[in-house]
Image (cartoon, rainbow, N blue to C red; front, side, top):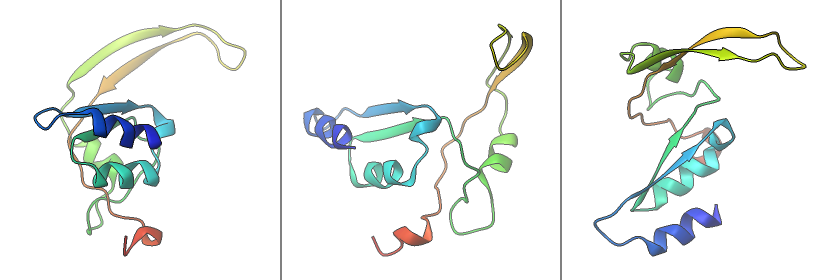
Length: 107
């Protein structure tokens, strides 16, 4: 997370840096750090079905309701753990506000 702060200091006012994370970046500490920075955002491939805002809405339901922006079939090669297969990649996106986990309340 130190890298997020370091890069923030190098960004001039009209610019914004967007960090792209795979599922390993879907951790509360990353979101908390980004919330503290002015010129930094994140795009995360989510790993957890998080709560949104202060209501009962969940991330997976919100994403399923979004229009498909990109769809493509891809061939996956056989590995030691799976057979070869054809998979469909679907991309949906929207901005969300995640509910702060209880152990971060008061920060």
